[in-house]
Structure formats: C-alpha cells, structure tokens
Amino acid sequence: MYLLGLVGLPLEAAPLLEAPVTAGARVVEKEPWASVDDVAKHLGIAKDTVYRWIESKSLPAHKVGRLWKFKLSEVDNWVLSRGAEDVGSTESAAKKK
Image: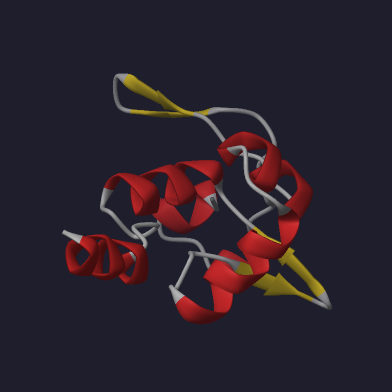
C-alpha cells in the first residue's frame, strides 16, 4: 500500500511500506505472499491439486515471473465460497443413489 498516494502525492513518489499502516483507528497489516507449497500445506492437499484448481476452478493466484503466489486470505475466502467444491463427485454420488 502506498501511504503517500492517499494524501495526494503521486504513487510513484511513495515508498512501499513494510510496517503496518494506521488508517484512522485501525491497523492494516501487510499480508505476506504464499507459495504453491504453502497453499498445499495450508489446505492439506497436494501441490498438483493447487495447480489444477488454478487452471480449472479459478483459484485466486498471481503469476510472478514463472512462480504462482497467493494471499492466504483470498484462498480461504475462495474455499469458503465453495470454490473448491467438486461438482463432478457430487453428480456421480447422486447417480449412485
């Protein structure tokens, strides 16, 4: 977040802040970027599943060079909004009944 951009100075002139920023009465923490390995461990899934979900299910990810980076809060929100739901297994389970 560029603090100086909030007070009217050009964003190019503002340094990227590393410490928490106080915005009014609340403190905004800077969330670190997570790797594919971190996301796989966080969700308890295989790294291959993370790559598959990026391609087929729109897992929120950001490409940085040749690496994928994530914000764990975005990943958690995506999972909670049923983004990781396996529609194919639900359909096949319904057919078995």
